[in-house]
Length: 183
Image 1 (cartoon, rainbow, N blue to C red):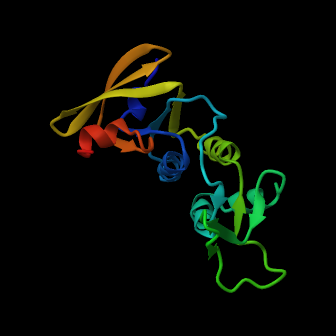
Image 2: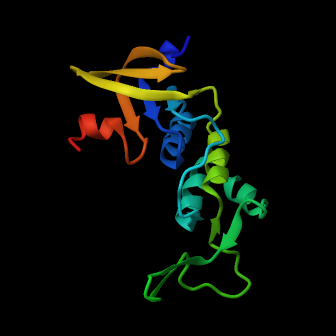
């Protein structure tokens, strides 16, 4: 069975940082849900690869050991003090992750390939409260009074399911944003 009925009240579309974060916090509250992802992990995305201290704070709210796991894998998560943007004419804009950084302080952020960071988060969503379906793409959304009928394709087989809540975390080409958000 593709969807488990007891996990169908909440469906998250997209297993990037936003979708995985939503899943982690739902699981922490003991709320069953389904997370669908059109790719198969590990998968890569284009990104700037910076992980600020704010991200670490959010991760620690879910898992107190997350920052420690990240700092203990410097071959994947490289310590970083901030970001410098450079325009084509050579103008620089520096954005520190911490304003009063002192020599010897632990780096307030990290750099990691999106492939590695997303996979780190994807592993963290595993719980008895999350039913995860990879290779599953959101294809259609229909409003039905106080719920939604969503149609997904999994391995080219289409299935329609009713859900009370759809959390759209599927990026800039989001079907939910186009259908429900008027974009």
